[in-house]
Image (cartoon, rainbow, N blue to C red; front, side):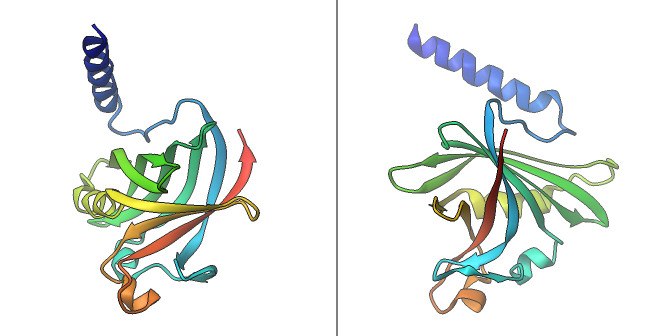
Length: 173
């Protein structure tokens, strides 16, 4: 019975993903809102950097990240360019507070003009968020989400495989 309930819930969640393909995903119970502040390296969290070249090439602009009360569930919003169109991107992520691991749960990308499927940019961002990590610095209210990125070593030094997107807590919702 328990497994049947879980399967039903999973099916309904999947169906809701298709209900509004041209709208951002929503985080039910959102409690905290943080605004994107720039990119950083793990070794220099207070030094803001320009976006990695691969993300500059798609004009990526992260906007906000919201989390629920537990800080386990998050929603990242942003935009990127593809085929001359501006694409919206939203990604629901799950944080494991014991290991600081971050996992992509679901994402959506669309063009408000409907002229692009935004598939390449979505795939790039999904790969970057598939299984990565985060750091929350409570004292300064900074949440840094790390993205796997092929340009990380150029920005952050030899051996680096990820760059951080720094978000600053702005308000309680």
